[in-house]
Image 1 (cartoon, rainbow over the protein chains, first blue to last red):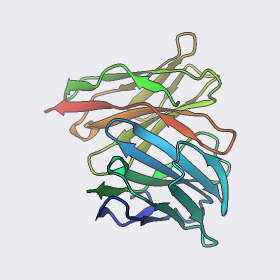
Image 2 (image 1 turned 180 degrees about the horizontal axis):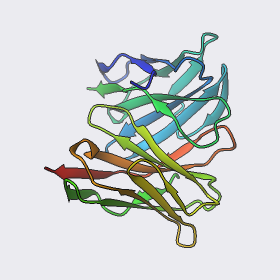
Image 3 (image 1 turned 90 degrees about the vertical axis):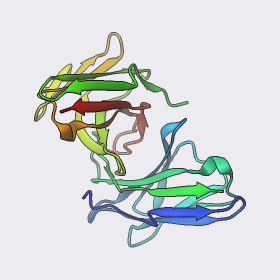
Length: 114
Length: 114
């Protein structure tokens, strides 16, 4: 158990809809990262938050947005969903100022868009 | 885009033998290189990292080798066990410092034959 909690574990929805994925980082971790894992693209970095502020952006679509709340939990919002958005979405957290790249991943939210 | 690639898609290894997983990377500026393991239905799990100023680092039953001349990274697993069956990803930490923005390779499946 990594200590990172993600909900829901599975989500099935239709094209055009909007969903929210939730993540609680490990206790004490200030950074939260979102990654998308699909069969054809592998693990893709989406966005990072640090103590409530956006720190880095990766290949995140404009239809997607995220935020980190004062209690450090984070939400990833996916809107106008398309079939190609079907993927595993992982949240990860890390120890403040750890430069090595050791991230603690949750078990992911599997999104299926029909 | 992000480009960290693995040579072999699947490695079958007899239990007790050593495993070697290879990875090519593209960004010479990365400060840390990391190996993650992902078991079925779980999120990636940190195995070991190596800083760019090192060429070898050992952990428990694992050794990571870094050859910056040819931009090659490898993970050696000694005395492979059934629990080592998983997908292994190499990743570069593209930072900047403390941001832990990881670029992952596409993964290499390791199957341990009992």
